[in-house]
Amino acid sequence: MPWQNDDRYSRQVLFRPVGEAGQACIRAARVLVAGCGGLGAESASLLARAGVGFLRIVDRDVVELSNLQRQALFEESDVREGLPKAVAAARRLGRVNTDVTVEPLVADVGPGNIRDLLDGVDLVVDGFDSFESRFLLNDACVEKGIPWVYGACIGSTGLAALLVPGRTPCLRCLMPEIPEAGTSPTCETAGILGPAAHLAASMQAGRALRWLATREAPDAAEVVYADVWEGRFTRVALPYRPEESRCPCCVERRFELLSVETPQTAGLCGRDSVQVRPLVPSRPDFAAIAERLRPHGTVLANEYLVRFRTGELELTLFSDGRAIVKGTSDPARARSLVARTFGV
Ligand SMILES: [Zn+2]
Image (cartoon, rainbow, N blue to C red; front, top):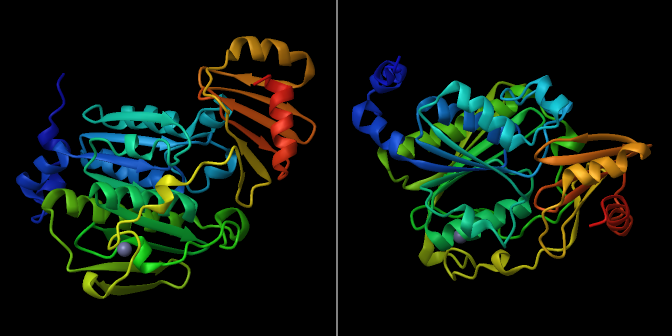
């Protein structure tokens, strides 16, 4: 039986600022969800349910038990199966709305792939967990003139802002200096309440739907902060005055982050983990690697990854040749463990 999609979106269409015309725009839209954790998973769910025609979801991680407290798109079975978040999200959304095309990509976003990820999208929803990634996204979006919805959450608080190149300040206007890695609190160090993540994601999705349905240009970027513990909302308007600004990104158009060379190893903030990238891209043979490792520890293998546990260490190898080592923050040790364990 064909689904009556008129009925599916009827409540949203009844909301006047959306209407039939806005719904058609939402249906035609293509959105990149960059990072699929507390913010991205919830935004992706809201956008898929709202009928955004195409969602590209990129994330580098696997669903973990500690995600389930706030990431409502995922289930215990995803943890047991060792599914990458992008894949688990696409599976779930495929069951929620067959009307929407979801393209899952298991990858780490960096200067080498960000332009390709933005290819053909109308809007980006920020689901990243680091400033480095957000500033990279800001550079790429300003370069290509693509609007994006900044979002962040920590503890009991969340915030969101729609940033439209040429019409509002960019992230670099708001924060001229990129906070150094490890200096800002993260969910892993300061904790996070589920409602704070959902609220920030809801504000992002609200901004996204409004833009997609109406293309209404904000006169100023507005950052909305909320605290779900104190029950407090604050809105700060940020007027755009390019003639007074010396922003290196949106005024001088120097996209510094796009030309940074990605290091081979990177500590994952606050997680006692290191990510190791391959020097040359490779397509590891998971079955052969799993077979070889089985006598030496606990092995989980599926079509997306192979994971090996021994003692305090856990090593996960992905199909793009990238590996994440948990249980150390020493890049040299991580590199050598990856080489020794996976032979890559
Ligand atoms: Zn700027």
